[in-house]
Amino acid sequence: MIVRDRPNALLLFFTLRGSILPRIMPSLLACTGLAVVVTIAHGMVLERKVTLTTVPFALIGLALSIFLGFRNGSAYERFWEARKLWGDVVYRSRTCARQVRAYVAAPPDEIAAAIRRLVAFAHALRCQLREVPADGATGRWLAPDEAAQFRAARSGCEFLLSRSAEELGRWHRTQDLAAPLAAAIDQSLAGLAAAQSGCERIASTPMPFAYTLLLHRTAYLYCFLLPFGLVDVAGVMTPLVVAIVAYTFFGLDAVGDEIERPFGTRPHHLPLDALCRTIEIRLLETAGETELPPALQPSDSVLL
Image (tube, rainbow, N blue to C red; front, side, top):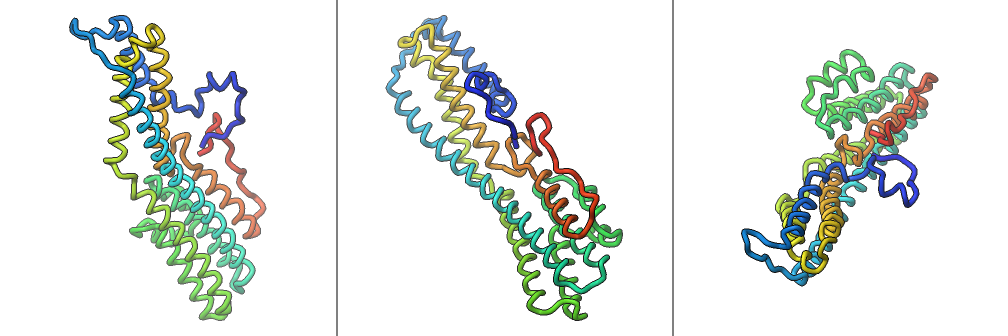
């Protein structure tokens, strides 16, 4: 996620970090280059004049801008829902750790292990959503035997929640935890499971490909044909006008494509590393540890 102060109006035109421009630059240059060629040839192709008026471009451009706006709104809704789900992971983890520390009359090492397992769950969920191995991220938060079972499990997140529930039941059977308090902690675990399911739903259900493909093709066809409709009206200003329109449409298309998958590691994706570090700090503090890791800071204006 891009984390930086908003530059002044003049610097906005020269800011590349956090801009979608580097991603669309090849397409933008190709479209502008075509506009230059069309302007020099004055719309002639193989000694034939390609005559297009601005009317169809005005109609198509209006419809295209509406559809791109709708698509980007849907993509941002997915991004924001993913952020709310991870906010729920932070909240439920902190609540569950506080409940375990305050309610359970078990030995301190069992309390600490249960809280560290919640940290491991956050890292396991992050790695699952980013499709990277979770061993290195979760191993140091688990006991050696539990870490081995985690590696053998089909779903690491499910294993950690099941282990927490099993320990909850054992504490209740040994009367280390009263039934009403056990039910409250179980509700926190259920909230973590619900947040996990919501994240999995977003990660495994992309926006319909046919819809994305239609907008992508239409935007590119529109921008590459636009010089033929403007050359008789805009003259030598045709490349500039085409570049501005193409930047807008290509940029909207690329932004929507990027934020509809919010769990990746691109600059505009969610900072899952930083969220997991927040969980680490809060839960270790709840467990009574004093040597806490520092909060992650943006690197080159990017917080991962």
